[in-house]
Image (cartoon, rainbow, N blue to C red; front, side):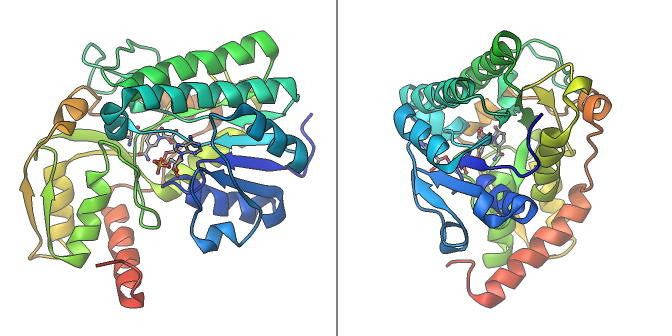
Length: 325
Ligand code: NAD
Ligand code: SER
C-alpha cells in the first residue's frame, strides 16, 4: 500500500504541462514533497517555490541519485521531445523519449517505487487508424518518430506492470491548450498560438489548413485527468499506460470563428507547412469511453468555455505586462 504522504519527482517540469502539473501537485501534496526537475531551469515561480534540480533524463545515475536522496515514491515523467521537434531530430527524439522512459522505469523498479505516470499521445495513431471516434484498442501505425516512441513507450510501461508489478499509468493526451507556459514544439501548438496572437496582434497565420480537425483538451481538464488517473483504484484498471482521453474536437477554422465571437476584427490566414502531414495522420475525434468506464474520466471544458477562459487569462497577462512583445 502506498503511504499517505507522497514524495514526488517530476521530470520535464519546465514544459507546457509539467509547469502547471507541478504547481497542482505541490498544492495537493505540499510544496516540499514535490521535487521538480528539468534540463533547463523553470521560471522562479516554480524553481524557487519548492525543491528543484537540473536533471538530464538520459542520465540514469543522476536520476537514481535524486530518487534516493529525496526519498521519492512517485514519478511524474513529463520530459520528452514532441512531434514537430522530433521530426527535426529523430535520433535525439528516440534517445530522450525511449532512454528517458527506460531510465525512469528501471530506476522505479529497482527502488520499489509505488507509482509512475508517463503520458502517451494521440500521435500513437496513424493513417490506417479509424479517424473518427478512434477506438481505445485499434491500429497503431504512427508516421513520426515521436509517435513511434509513444507506441513503444506504452508497450514498455505495460511490460513493467505485467512483469514486475510496477504501477505505471498514462493516457494519450490530445493537443493541450494553456496560457501559462508555451508548448514545446508539437503539431497542435497552433491552438495555443492562435489565442496569444489574437490578444497581442488581432491576427494569426496558421500552419495547418482551415479544415484540419484534431482532438484537444484545456489544461484544467488535463490536470484533472492526470490527477484522477493517478488516484484511481488499481483494481478497476484493465488498461494502464494507454488510455484514450479527449475533451473536444475542432478545426482550425472553428477555433478562429470562436475567437471572433469575442474579438470580431480577428483575422486568420492559413499557410500549411510540414506539420500538416503530421496532423493529417492523426485522429479527428477520440472515443474515450474506456477511461470513463475504468476511472470515471469526464472533462469540464468545451471550445466555447475554454475560449472565454483563455482570452480572459491572456488579457490579464497582457495588462500585467507578462505576455511578451
Ligand atoms: P514540453 O515540450 O512543453 O516540455 C517538455 C520538457 O522536457 C521541457 O521543459 C524540456 O526542457 C524537457 N526535456 C527535454 N529533454 C530533456 C532531457 N533530456 N532531460 C530532461 N528534461 C528534458 O512538453 P509538454 O507539452 O509539457 O509534454 C509533456 C508530456 O506530455 C510529454 O510526454 C508529451 O509527449 C506529452 N504530451 C503532450 C501533449 C501536448 O499537447 N502538450 C499532447 C500529448 C502528449
Ligand atoms: N501536442 C502533441 C504534439 O503536437 C501531441 O502529442 O506533438
